[in-house]
Amino acid sequence: MLDLFIDGIAAIATPDTLALMILGVIVGIIFGSVPGLTAVTGIALFLPVTYSLGPIKGMALLMAIYIGAVSGGLIAAILINIPGTPASVATCFDGTPLARKGQAYKALGVGTVFSFLGTIFGILILVFVSPIIANFALKFGPAEYFSVSVFALTLIASLAGKSLIKGLISAALGIMFITVGAAPIDAVSRYTFGFSGLRGGFDILTVLVGLYAISEILSTAANKKALAAGSGQVMQFSGKGFGFTLKEFLSQKWNFLISALIGTGIGVLPGIGGATSNLLAYTVIKNKSKTPEKFGTGIIDGVVASESANNATIGGAMIPLLTLGIPGDAATAMLLGGLIVHGVQPGPLLFTTHPDVVYGVFAAMVVASILMILVQMFGLRLFAKVLKVPKYYLMPIIIVLCVLGAFALNNRLFDCWSIIFFGLVGYAMSKFDIPLAPMIMSFVLGETIETNLRRALMYSNGDISTFVTSPISCVFLVAAAISIVLTIRKQLNDRKKATA
Image (cartoon, rainbow, N blue to C red; front, side, top):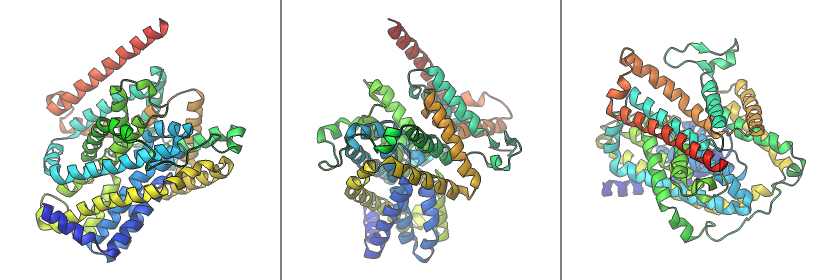
């Protein structure tokens, strides 16, 4: 294995390949940081470029874009409270408050370092234990996916804030919006009201960009002082290294390990991906914290959890792609196309038929991670200075980028109108103090739950006992029930303390 890995390093350690990878990382960071543009868009645009390249060189370029884009999402999430990608939603929760405290450089530094470490962790898992994890993932059928998603959904309560009722309202809105359009399995149109645009449903990116970007712009526009004075706060644009101390770094070791394990585990399960892993890791770390009330106020724990998990998902998502030929998310689906274009068929025989390509991909992921942290390190001060730009200049630019990004998703004008609609929804929710996170979580998981519920019932001829006769499914359903009981108990205790 070591010899093959060294051969992989040698294959990509050529000036032209490294130049392509540097370009790929920069493009990826840009696509990740611009709301609406994602790793999928970047890979799709550069996929034709790889036709004239060999499989190793071509995959090195695509992996660099992929890794750069997932990490780049933290820039917009921290600086302007807009998740650049769905995998960066939870980064907003503590990254933006930390930046508003005057510690933008520190927030970016923490996010960058733990993005790098999360990616490396996922790659190590990919290299050493991919066959074992892939075999376990094979045991997951519709019933198991349904139960895992239900368990994840029960964690919404910890994102609900002070009012569980408002959290449930937010979650119900997410479920409501995900049911619009063609139903899974049979493609029956639902809640379209005769509008052809609604048949395709709402894309996750239009929901995110609308709820976070457009609603943030509307809130800022309503405040004349904030609009004229930029951030309105004294920001820290310099610091030593990455802006945090060795003591702070070491204090996050267990946070990082747990979040990275969650990210890798979620990445292995096809169809879930970083959009879920960062939220799940954030809620788990918040629930186990001795000071959960500090989350959301601007502490590095939240940034570490989100960025460690979403970047570890990269390695996890590559496991089913390479070992089973099953893409873990939309980005790895594009990577699958890149391999097939070069005559490489992923699957159980890939490690014996094309070991040079496999270990070339592994080496490219490691090198791309190093290039990513170097590019981000030199760009920290530049990124942080975005906060000095007066918002009456910044906001129109963001609106244009959001609209362009929305249109680029599917070349539909409907998506442009969708982000405006969800911007108004997000603005109204902020006025009524209804949290956005539960809505995002339920929107992300809603389709997975419905699809796998219907599939499981189809395979079992309508027998609901299939969800408890499967050991894995039963364990997750029991965990979900325990989670609900503990949440209700905590809410009652908090209410008693408040009354006292």
